[in-house]
Image 1 (cartoon, rainbow, N blue to C red):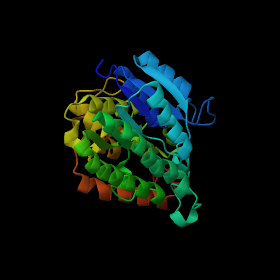
Image 2 (tube, rainbow, N blue to C red):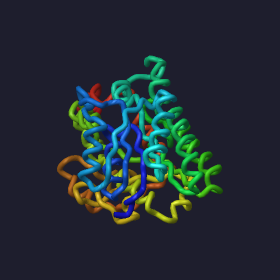
Image 3 (cartoon, helix red, strand yellow):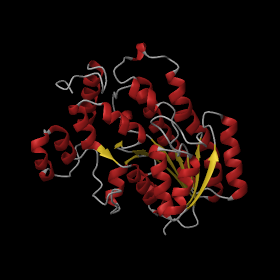
Image 4 (cartoon, one colour):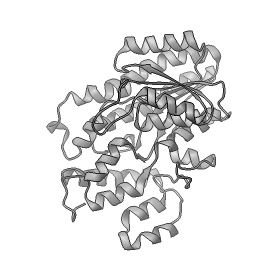
Length: 331
C-alpha cells in the first residue's frame, strides 16, 4: 500500500466528505486520525461517529484513530496536535475538512443573506476557515521540521462564483486564498498545500435533500452526484505523488485528480469531472433522452464558463424558494 507508514489527519471525518477521505487514505494503508464532535451515533439525517469511521479505515487496510475534537475551539485543536506529536511523532498529511453549517446551507437555499440569522457566518467560517488556519499552523510546524508534508483544504466550486449562500461562498473563496498564501511560504520548506474541490457529493445530508427536491432539481443532483470516496482517493493520490509540489498553491478538482491517476468511483465507474460535457448533458436531457448523454464527450468545460452557469443556477434556485420550494414545472 502506497501510504503505509504515513500519518494523516482528517478533520470533521465522522460523516460526509471527511468520511470518504478517511476511507480513501485507509485504502492506501495510512494511519488516519479521525476527528469530529460526534462520538455517539448522530440522529436525524446526519448519522455517523468518529469511532465507526475509524473502524472503516481499519477494514480498508489502514489504521484508524478516533479523537474527539471541536475544531471551533483553539484549545482542543492544540491538544489534538500535541497528541499526534506525542503518539506518532510525525504528521505527513493534514486534511482540513471540518465545517459547521451544511444543514443550514440546505435549509437557507431559498433565502437571501439578510433573511438569515447573521450568526451563520461564525457557525460556518469559525470552523471552516478560522479552524483550518489554526490547524494548519500546528500541522505546518510538524511538517516543516521534517521538510515534508501535504496540507489539503477541502473547498468547493462555491469559491468560483455566487453559489447559494453568501457566507458559504465567501468562506470558500477565502479558504482558497489561504491555500495559495500558505503554499507560497511553505514551498521553500518542502511542504505542499492544495485546495480540493469535490463535486456534488452524496452524503447523508445531500441524499435527504434529493428526496425532497422537485423532479427537475433531482435530475440535476443525480447528474452531478459523486461518492465521497472520489475525494478520498484523490487525496491519497496527491499524498503519494512525488511531484505534488508542482500543484502546490492551486485548486485541484477531486474527480480530475482521480481520473489523472487512473482511479475509479466507488461503484467501479469512471470518475467524471463535475465540469465535463457528459455531466451537463445528463443534467439537461429529460428522462427519455438520458441515454444520449453517454455519447457526450468527457472533456471539461472551462471554468470561466462554469462560473456564470453556477451563478444562474443559484439565482434560479433562490427565486424558486430552494430545492423543495419550486413547483415541478420550475424545477
